[in-house]
Length: 109
Image 1 (cartoon, one colour):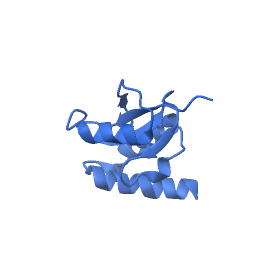
Image 2: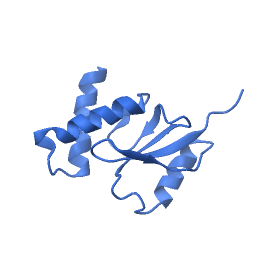
Image 3: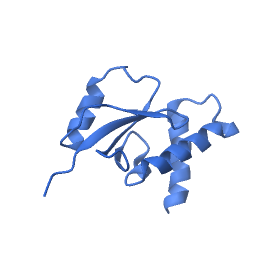
Image 4: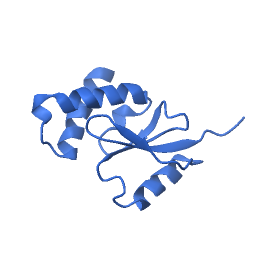
């Protein structure tokens, strides 16, 4: 049986995302790479470790652990909808993440 491989996905407030080209053997390797990237993806502040196919979130960045196990396509839509909400205009990353976390909490529980 082959070991799963992972990629690092970086997302904007409105759900657009980029993935690092590198494939990682472990989740920890992906996070290490994330920590070593510096500000390369500054405009993509929300980072996730995803499956190699970029379909499922394995681990999430700060405050967004409710995203773990969810589909990237679903999270992309949630981010887009949240970014368009009037109360989220001009908020920083932490407030946006708190809003998303409370929304995901209601969605999953």
